[in-house]
Image (cartoon, rainbow, N blue to C red):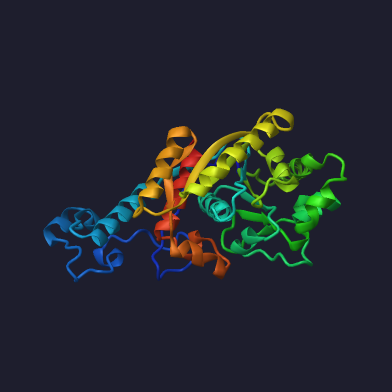
Length: 350
């Protein structure tokens, strides 16, 4: 980006469910019928006189739960539209980690990365989970014959020879994972500087981009496996910040203390600059008291780290990977997409 260009990027307009997948196709509609699937059924009534004076979304009757939820989501869309996301002063590198499986690590990684990239920021996702789910969600090939992050860590292949472009979002690239990573933990044991190999690969890649005159990366997200082995240690050593997704259930709290102890050890012996900067509550079910209690407890212990944005349980978020997409492109107007946009905006503005 040249010096004459602005240092902030604008979040693109949302698109409706029936619109094209790409961002920026159409602005948020201002008619009730486009956002009110139950119009005519009595759930939301709009008076012509009030609508003539302003946005009809402000006049939705909140007499039913469906209408209240609809009005709430419309207000969220309006707050996000036009918000500027600042470019960081230097590349921010996040490790997305939690040794408990199924808490939304990969989903959080790809959707926050997609939200930031869609706003015009340059984002790299590094997939070091042998399952390769982040690569799948971003539409990146990751079969056994593809050069992957395994070759970077074990065979000293340059990271620039491995990264691939996400087909849906122009500013988003990914270093894919393959099944070969399943044996990388054992192979790393005998290698020199085994904990620092990913960090050095990222440094070399940054210098290569600068030499070619390419824009520097604004964000790097490293998607970790659900373990605390050498792959995760490499991620901790390469990053400056840790993003911890926490499922709003009791078991997620049990594993958090062990994760924090491991991070403390990394800080003491390998990476003094590492900090737990961000905690995101995921799979939140507002119908249960348990979810509210877990959220309150996490916020009490980590008031500065927990994001205000909360990711709800969402069918759309779960469906998106089956189409090799993030929810940001699969259904940008869904509640899940809005939640990840809010989380991305919070991270960028911190």
